[in-house]
Length: 355
Image (cartoon, rainbow, N blue to C red):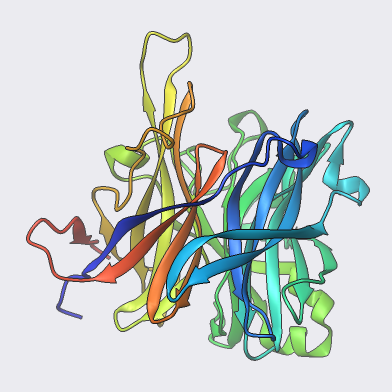
């Protein structure tokens, strides 16, 4: 691979804001996932948050004017915190969905964060139509003696699934998931982990196991690190954004990077920006290229609306009408859209990563 990637983002606008007359989304409607339903319509599942910080996933039609995204038409709740492990007293909920259409399964696989008594925990659900979901339950991380720790002890967020099988650690076909363990130094770090900042890991589920029983999709193994914070815009932590997409160079992963900024406020401000990396098609734990600067940073008034956080939080990619759109959360309140473009630029933020 000799050519530097040429992927960039350009803002399109905001297509969804909270309905302040609806108590269910009074605190925000944001961080969506997107899918094309069997009836041909594009729909999204947005995280909507009620007062008291209770989150649900709300279904909405994406309203198009040709290929231009102009808004949404709200529908009902697709997933609510109905299970005990999705609730934490009067708070909690189901958050930050990412859906992947998997041809080999003939299903959408939804990864989301269940906010229960033990903090954020990854969970999976499946659907044939993007509208009706069946839970598979929380994710279980296999114990690996080499890590000398149980990853299940730590909260875990930003789980996304590759849309097709890849080579697992044993060389056999596997479904791969990126995730972000949230290490707690008080509990001790896994063997070989020296940087406690939150980074991106990958785990695998053998295809043959899933063919035996779809419920096996929640049993992750073969855990290994992929990427840690590297550049100033992500010096605090990083996490996966939308599910990776296949490009000529490998797998394109849009991710979020979080940086700390000291202000006059008592606590540092956190800025969330969208960056990107290219993962090796033959070994998805290997990063080939990364963006040294963000492709999309919180620069607009809406994106900087938070007092202690300025937020661009990428969560979905969809090719609609020949254009590839990135959907992202704006300041934990709105749904923004940017267009992903492939165009050479003299000021490219992409750089090769030494293997």
